[in-house]
Length: 89
Image (cartoon, rainbow, N blue to C red; front, side):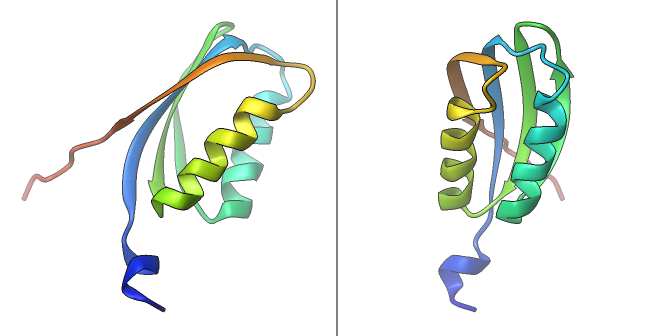
């Protein structure tokens, strides 16, 4: 495993739009698992989902692209990302 593969980013992803379809949260969980990302849903509402992701930045980029494109029963208007600073200890 290269040093780049071992580096992990921690980010909060906020997905805005018409995201209340019952299929979207399980879809997010499956997609994150396929990419090997650790994820935790923090907020889930009809117009906003916030989740924390941990993994390589390139895979978090892929997660963002996946969420922006699917599934068909949601409409994603915007995705915002912010690093999570967890430098305690």
